[in-house]
Length: 246
Image (cartoon, rainbow, N blue to C red; front, side, top):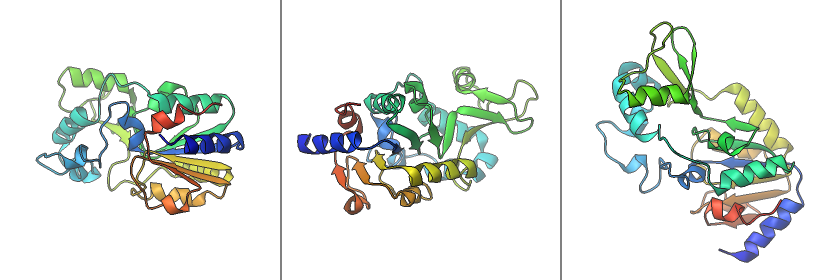
């Protein structure tokens, strides 16, 4: 780990009062959740259909049993806990340094670590709705259905199919979440981007709204935005943030 860069990051944090964190899959891989696009991620495994196809709105509507087989095996992973990155971000918010977490992840780990202002661009596996009557079901209910071997989870009120509140391919992002994200980014004095290759749009395009003082990129591999950053650290997001004092 580059201690000089850690020192510089600490100085930037000390000099900032409205930090926004923008994170992707790399934040959760350190908790054991697979990255869709890494060498060992979902996109490099073999299924009857490509993951992009299975995780589309059209596929969900046409083949719910196969959708849920993939979803339960690869996305609904039980026993996952927040890592050092999640915990440090929650601490930064509690200390009044960080104003929001904007995440592309759907696992709810930021909230589990204690973060309050979490803008989930792609939804959450912890929220699920009956497509017929709209009744809400939490993640625990879905894990119960999975454990019971239910092929397609059903509403216990009307019998309708339950759909996860996650943004599938072909579906648009929530406009309210987008507007809040734009507001937070445009009012931040520091933006820390972590665990994302910045290739998923329109989410990645949101960072263009940042006009603050410090742009920091923390990712294990290079990104297309590295040249624009004030500081680039190619290391574990959890290990880096755990070195920061607030």
